[in-house]
Image (cartoon, rainbow, N blue to C red; front, side, top):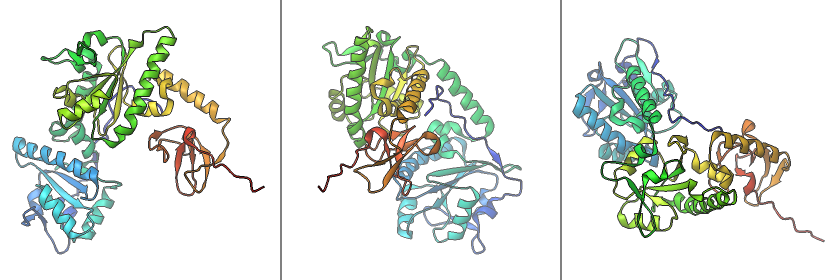
Length: 415
């Protein structure tokens, strides 16, 4: 697992599929020249000509679709209010039955839809745009080149309304702005605002100035009391945090060279206090707008998440959680050089591991595999945390566990 120092992920460019692609040929069938509205009205497909159109592949049974749909509705309504009627979305359902489709579409979506019964059109659209998973948002531009953008979900999460009109020119502009913003990044810019220049602490003073944290390695811990994965990861992080502090003391460094700041996604003040009181580190105030600003800035899709900032305030890695799971306290200070050293050590250690292992949590024999032939990235079936590099894998069914999670079967002698 190689770290990326930059937060800028190059968005796939808008692709051209030819100049004969028309909305009427995409969305119609031999028996239908209309799309449905949420009220059941039939809207002529010809009304879409000249508009930017998003094709939204989704289903009510998938929680990630439900989450993204709520965001997409806000963005859609904002675009319509700000830019008028030059944008539309067409829902392509993967729901299990008509009732599920109606509940999902009529209650939660304000845009158009392919009728649920038109399986052939839905299959053709999935095949044409090579849809491998949902939610998926394909953006079509109304120009002679019939350009297509496949990363609509990514763009909506990262930029929201600002991504409109989803052209190459607009995406290049956004990437340039994002790159410049991250190049200017400092701890003060990230954490302070006009009303606050401190974070919370458990000490009697209750506050620590952000200026006193400059020059340290900082972890931004995105979590919440209601998040079940956080309940499992937070105790591990507390243990590693304390071990890193102890390690710094043993190496004659200041233990305060490393600190963590809690960035809350709790529902209310009571949940926040419950979360923060269980943690030995610092926190941003619960109702501070910086919590949401940081979540958007670092494109946090799920929690718990651990962002590591270097002493210069720049982002070292967004993969702090994975590095903690892989290397524990040895991951500090989380730099590319440190990770490369640990990866090389892992390769050396793997030479002394058995090539096959029986694991008490699985009924098939497991084979030792490396990153090059199936070892990562993966989710460990024993501890449910991400892994990379070397692993024990079941060739028959894909079951994988960290090498450190293997619990060999103890054979009892019959003698």
